[in-house]
Length: 65
Image 1 (cartoon, helix red, strand yellow):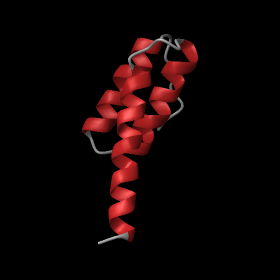
Image 2 (cartoon, one colour; image 1 turned 90 degrees about the horizontal axis):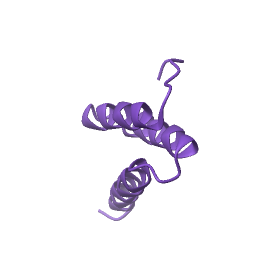
Image 3 (cartoon, rainbow, N blue to C red; image 1 turned 90 degrees about the vertical axis):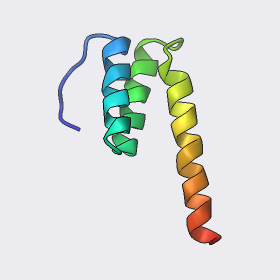
């Protein structure tokens, strides 16, 4: 992720969605964290939680084929 500054939680949330759609899941989580820091009630809270669940599921699969 580059060092762009976003003014609002909504912008960080949208950037996270773009990163998620591009398969850049860790970048998406970082963007969601920025959105949550600016607005604890942001929809990024749920998006981050769901993405972490997906990553945890895949992680378990790699250890238990």
